[in-house]
Length: 113
Length: 113
Image 1 (cartoon, helix red, strand yellow):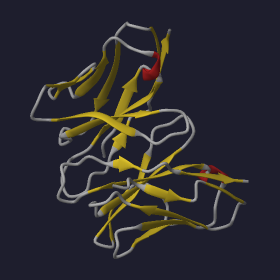
Image 2: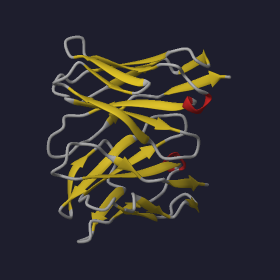
Image 3: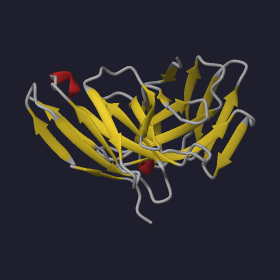
């Protein structure tokens, strides 16, 4: 039973560029959430996707957008990258009909130069 | 929105001693409180959780207590071992359709052999 997977593991970009991160949820899960974890801080909620639609959104600008595919996998896109976007991006999945436990992927380490 | 505060930010204990980490939350509607352990360079892993309809939950050396009136919850680790060394995060959410977790700032626990 595969857990949550993410790609790529690491990514280096320059300011102004755009980036796409990918996530496959745990088998049996249909809801995907994205979090940004800056160094030394707790994860911060970006948004959540369910039934291919954004269901909830945290306090992040429109430069952050996402998508969910029919197979429940998801993408996080960030446009016009800023130095402050450097962080670990975590994907978490759970089941809409479940009891709330979210399982995290290994994350993508994004460095913006 | 929800705000979660976590204390202490660092905690150093001797192997075999107990460790206690405390969190407070602001939204009285929150009803699900998970705790995650994050080792260096790895994903957050759920170690225990508690729902608002119970006051305490135990799993071997780990226990969590919840005081809904005071809006605080705590993680207790007994008989600490060096492998317990990690960063621990508390979180809170209203467990409805869409579990947007709000995390505390984290506690770095160091267990000295």
